[in-house]
Image (tube, helix red, strand yellow):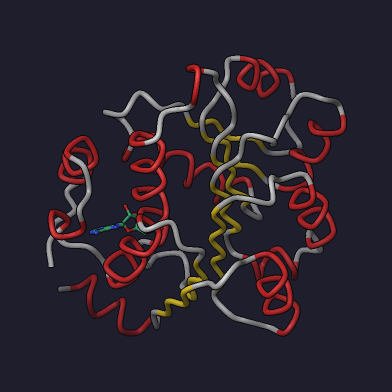
Length: 220
Ligand code: AMP
């Protein structure tokens, strides 16, 4: 299987080639067609399996193929990630894969001052990758509007739970439009995550990759 076989548009294929990727990883091969088709998805996969591109590529394609009406700039994709490092990696992925699309991703996380992030929000990003605490904080202050979100990604859901973010996550979900595409990624599926998935996803496809199989694939 090649990236061309996944019906990805040329600007994305060019970016993937520039990253030096030759073939899709198993999670990319299995998830991309469903996400492109607009389905909700549960992805059981760890970091290192190529899951960032598995959701970033089809999301970028959706945003390019369905431009915002009236050219208004709204946050059209929200990705929640448990740590600053992961959020930064995901935003870097969106920047790299979307470099020929003109779409604007930004990253938001806590501990550091918020001013730069508030300014970045004012410039109208298409994609926001955030840790839950700071995002909620900025929402409460009125700096973030989520009513234009079309695709929502909850990444590393089990770690969100372990780190005590689940209440913040629920509050953020409550501010999202009901009509949206939702993607949930988690390395494990504890009961609490299964319940969250049952509540927030509609008829999801489930895609699973085992880390060991992926290691072999990567070495290939
Ligand atoms: P992730 O699981 O998204 O954090 O990705 C793990 C690493 O795999 C990152 O360094 C990616 O750049 C790399 N990667 C993602 N997809 C591919 C691919 N199809 N071929 C080779 N490397 C990839």
